Image (cartoon, rainbow over all chains, first blue to last red; front, side):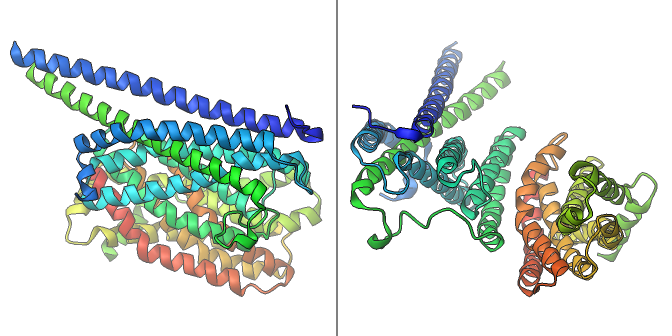
Length: 54
Length: 243
Length: 218
């Protein structure tokens, strides 16, 4: 199934590996920061609502 | 319904929520199909052997790296002229994506260049311009981080993006003047004759489409993050004042 | 306008004003080069135009810190921003003052340092011409970089990160002109392009710098 990469196997495989790692890293950082920010906003909105009522 | 409606954060977030699922899904499909097709189901190139497979990641990432900056430039102009916060935040959101794409472009370029040209790096015009683009991204992101007031940060980074773009363009030509270069000519010209052959072209264009959709999805999500942070900060400030 | 220029010049020449530091740095850098690349004359002669250009550029960069930061701290910039003189003109004057106190001395010192680096005889003239044409660009681009980062505490390093990529076209054409001159090739193209960059920078960057400054002071 794996194509015969011959002498260039290292270069080709490392390119793909590096790309996937970097994109995965970007996704992870993006999602973590995003979820934390949205949670923080939700908490702020709840507290603002409580403050309004109290 | 004008495009400018989406300068309103609420409308923007609503649109983003509708578009994102499609963007993420299509991006995943495009990248998966493009890379699997390219990696497993295409032949070796006559001259470049199996390294031709690197094209399916190198070209799309480089394409996004440049277009991300162009998008940031347009968004910066919109901020400076019309003061839409969504625009400034979109530029801020796009920069790290562009930076990562530039790094991928540089890394895959080096890995491809070593077997082909016998060197990990060459001061060829395209590579050199790419390296300068990397530095511009770093500077832009660093400036955002360094300024406390968000609106001032948006202002100054927009000016940097503008002036930087002019100099980046100048650099591109200066560097061409300075060295003729090893890098092949344009892969993506509209004139089909210059293009690489179809058997490589179709998986490549699929991959490019996938990367582009990934960029869109990431920027939409990240702009949403920035909007959330901005709102949370505003609410926090208000709560503090009332306390 | 003249008053502003004279004031800036006087401040630079005063003790503690930083005049001469750029020159000293230039000298030290040039002296370090043979220690890093070896003393072989032919090699030094080949790289001399480029090294001298790079040294002048870095010396310019180092003196940009004082360009606006001090005035920002003591409130002078606020005064300048509200004065009848347009801020753009004031910043152009500051760029000019920087060139007179930093760029120009570097241009004059370069041939002397060229001797240390075994610069070919026919290269001296072109080195001076290229630096004379290019250092105004360095001063004005630096002024823009300083305006961008003036409000940032200890923003010197960030300013360098921002300004150095902007310096690339100037460096390419300036050093190319100096190199070609040193080996007797035609220098018109790089010199013209270099002059173009300087003229463009001096004409347009004061506006960008003033805009940036207003954003910080606001």
